[in-house]
Image (spheres, rainbow, N blue to C red):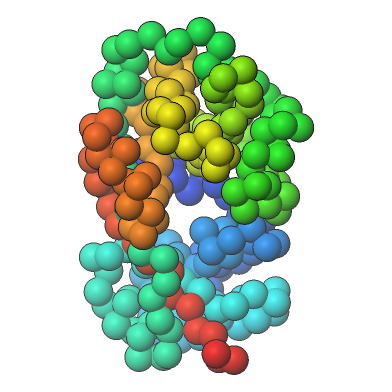
Length: 239
């Protein structure tokens, strides 16, 4: 994963607070999920840094959790030796925005607004993008927008997009169950690319769980390429 994509990936979905444990940056997520509640490599690390990061997690009332790139085998081995187990394998994908702006979005299908409307927040909540996760969106610096997707005169989809440098990152794309498999997600992704270009960004990126085969098939069909992969490594001592 190149530097521009890595920077956008981190800065457009930030933790509420960070603390340093040697070579790790530890995120305080306030209930907003593993992405912002994990520790990640941010320099040279030693084994004791893993334990220091876990102590910070514990002090915040969080499960000790690390985010490791698939190729970081030294870190993965060190975590597994300490009883951490892999969760939620995820791929980071990206595409040139111009590759998604080669057609016209049908009228009144997608809109960009900020701040999000109540209906967008309701759509996110229906898809387990909770208020805590929505709070992450609120603290992201501009430029950012929320996309509303409509089908059959109904609000049916929501997504969040933010930019860092030349890269726009798409987060929190959610289509209500009743309106899935009607092509709306494809138009929402294209709207994100149009908006990114209007703001001066040339690329669009996103993260998708490897278990979400339907979403991955859509993104592959649209031309996204895999730039990196990662997993969470958690130690759940009570399990």
